[in-house]
Amino acid sequence: MREWTIYIEGRSFRISGFYLWVISVLLFMGISYSGISIVRFAKTKNEKAIVAKLMEKNLVIKERLMGLKEEIGRFQQHLDNIVTLDKKARIAWGLESIDKDIRALGTGGRASNNPGIDPLVKDIKMAIESARNVLDFEKTSLSDISLGIERRKSLLEHTPSVWPTTGYVSSGFGWRRHPVYRKREFHRGIDISTLIGRPILAPASGIASFIGRRGGYGLTLEIDHGFGYRTVYGHLHKVNIQLYEQVRRGQVIAYVGNSGISTGPHLHYEVKVLGKSVNPKKYIINSKVSY
View 1 (cartoon, rainbow, N blue to C red):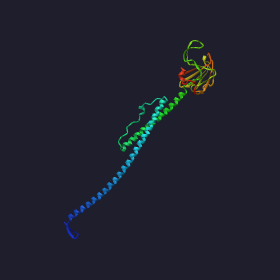
View 2 (cartoon, rainbow, N blue to C red):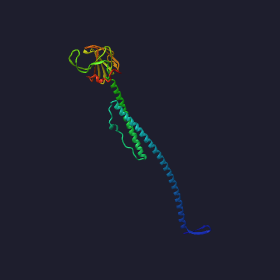
View 3 (cartoon, rainbow, N blue to C red):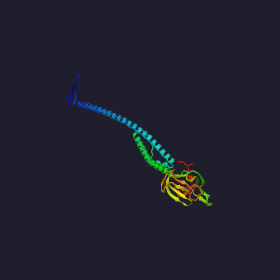
View 4 (cartoon, helix red, strand yellow):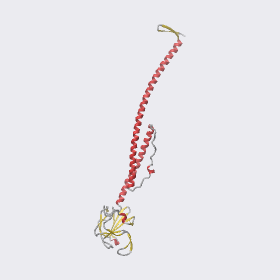
């Protein structure tokens, strides 16, 4: 194999072509490896920088998610307060309460203790879904409460509850001896003795359903209050409203008289519930007339 002469600092060296080729190959491999190492180092450094930035962004996202979770928690507390008010309103207005199992429909799940982002996202999604279900439920419930309150108010407004006039009760509800015929009978109302011409006030709102003479009751007025309530006023001197006229509680509807079979001026007052006469005193909540 051919030999080569190499001069280094005035000294000569002879080397075969094979060894020169080996040295050349080793030098090439060394340079190549160094280049690859440099590239790898640069690439690794760049990747680390990217990972560091991603971790920083991840931390920011996590902090924001934690803040959002806390905000949702405060919002859920407000929802709990609304549910509490819902329950109190139903009790206050005598409305049917909602079973706790029904309120729990569509909600549930427990927050995760894992601090990772994925569990946080799942917890937030679950909390939002739960809040949405509660809001939808309360929207329906509050609508029912509003309707129930209006019905309740209407019922109270149309339920006889005050004295129709002033005076004293000369004959109560139940069995008695008739003051004229002197025979035992069932008295379907109460007699309130008072001065003739004294105003009679509607004990509840309603519509005049009858005005006219009715046997021993003389001039009689009947008011239909709705909800199954009717009131009857007998022995009147004069009626102050027209047939089928709407009246309001406290409105002057007639005047005390002495018409029909009567021993003196008084008001015969009846309360009927679903067509059955009941003791009017059970539907009088004040000790004297007040509106």
